[in-house]
Length: 399
Image (cartoon, rainbow, N blue to C red):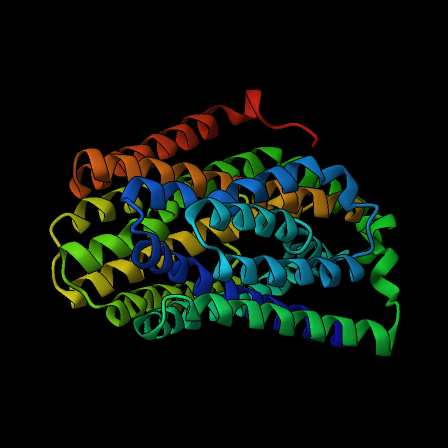
């Protein structure tokens, strides 16, 4: 199992590095090569996320029947080929087509990888595993944007080719693990009952009673990812073209955010106060709303760095809440499907956020984007508090 854990954590790190390099690199590539407008950037940048949502939801019923180790190894090869196609595309339309293929291929990678990791773990053990996993992939997002900023300075296509090469490296690692070590004992773990790993069926059943926490955590993830969608596609243009930050500086700002993400994941892995609690979810949404309003007043790179750091902390909390409550109490065979829902919400919110931010920015101003998205975070917090107040009567049920 230790060997599998190394493969999972290494793959998560390299995949996140590739995706974050590709994400920022694609914005610069589309802008410099094809002169894409902000609204176009907002749409094209999230086409892979849209197809990823379709894949996660449309193929969810298949996940529990697919081999957990072979599926991500095969899908990552298609991911690498799709990114290479983006780098060779001769126009925005072809770029979008390859981006759609990328999202569909990734829908067979991330949910399977996370379901493979969760296994039969529960409670503190589950939280510890997820903390290590989140730290691994988030460490990749530390490196990726900075690489994209520097590589994009010399060649707009360089970040894309780098991402394709890193995805290919993941495939090599996974296939080597399969070829030299064969099938792991954990490959059939999803047929087991979650209670068998901790000897307490009643404890697992009690966790499954807390369905309300899962739904509210998913709502919080939607709010945070809605904001992050704008940050991935529109913030770079705003920082670069309006505030005058260089491309390496923009990469540095996203690096700071990723470092804060990583640090928060480590901290949350050591704490349990947030498990099945509403008030932390709502408070973080309100803090995100305040932060977005603060962004309106910022101009210096240093102040933007602190704000991006706070944004990373807020997103890490919402993400951890969602992924933990998605699988807590679920039977192993259900976990990959639950993770698929988590990933679909993450990407769907990013798609909506990116597109809306692009249109609002192009039609009005960046201040309008910040104020509109802050209002959305407040709305999410209000729903979380309202549902939490009435959950004993309406929302506590066996999942």
